[in-house]
Amino acid sequence: MDDTRDQPDATRDQPDGSGIGSGYACVVRLITRAVPSHTHDRRTETAPTFGQETDGPVHGTVCGMGAVESHLRFGLDLYRVLASRVENACFSPYSIASALGLVTQAAKGKTREELIALLGDPDELADLLGKASSLLEDGPELAVANTLWAWDGLPLEDSFREELATWPGGKVESAPFGDDPEAARALINADVARATRELIPELLKPGTVAQDTVAAIVNALYLKTAWTNPFSRDNTAPADFHAPSGTRTVPTMWLEKQLDHTHEDGWQVVRLGAEGGVEAIVLLPDGDLDDAELDAGKLARLLENTRSKTIALSLPKLDLDVDSPLTAKLQDLGVRTMFTAAADLTGLADDDRLEVSEVLHQSVLRIDEQGLEGAAATAVLMRLTSLIVDEPLEVAVDRPFLLLVRHASTGVIYFLARVVEP
Image (cartoon, rainbow, N blue to C red):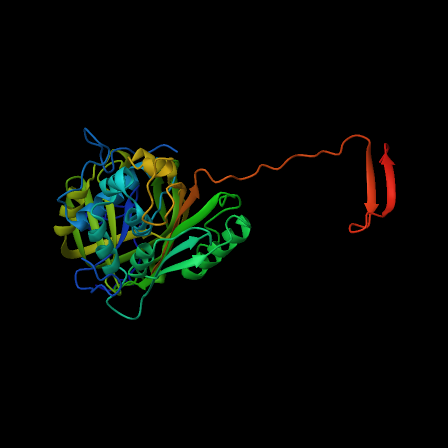
């Protein structure tokens, strides 16, 4: 059926209930089954019931789980600690997993064990991320960069350099962390801005690179692709969206097409295909999003059970830009040792004083009638625990004083002043 007919009210009952008139989740993923790896040649207040907690550890064990299900579980773990009942959340499991995956490759002992418990097998993860760094077609744009920024005095391990080189866009760069932290920050931000096509111009805000920072593992991701079934701009119109703060009117797109859909276990799922093997998946709960339960197993089943049918879909346009400090959230998920003096990151550098000081993330996602564009970046900042940083000795000239102006090499005094009333 032609999608240029008069646009219905986006909040009325649509066939299969697919009008988006209340809280929903949107997942953008890559279809990777047929994509060969060309980069990795080795194998606020949270919404607690999405990615429901179970008895025992927050995220449990991922041993024996497939890499894809481990990644789904990781994404839902992050969602549970990042989601707010009253604010938008947007983050990139791919970007965060890439940065933390490289930390895992550098980690040993308990530091490594905690990361594996959250991320899954590090080699399987690296292989999965490598496969997802390729698209099936040339038209869409996908760019991935993984960069280790390091102080020149840090004794990097050759094995880590070699490992990083196998990751998508993997490279090592020098940054003047100790000498000029702000210059180091500017270098990193400029590189991220280039990689994300200026969607993320300032990942690191002023003051985030401290004088004791010696390294940063930074992932940057950019994706732009068009829908295989684009929405007609003529059908986009204001429609009601029932937000937690109250019903408000938002620009809403409308499409009637054969789309993959399922409705079960309290969720409706609509899959929107895009070029290059990318798809956006709309997850609409039957009731309140805060009360909806979803774990990795259920999400996998929902995706497997979609079937093609005629859907009249109304979907708000999106323009999201969200900063997500991750340090405390990762600690909530059981990753704690790497932030302490007990951290073992000697796989990165031959210095047992290295620890993670902060993990930062930013994500941008835009969805309109033609397709989607997104960018994300994650920075893992590292410091030396016992690095001596001299505190400035304060000299406040706030009382009468003497002043000499002299020739430095001979000691000849040009002027001598006694200042009591400046």
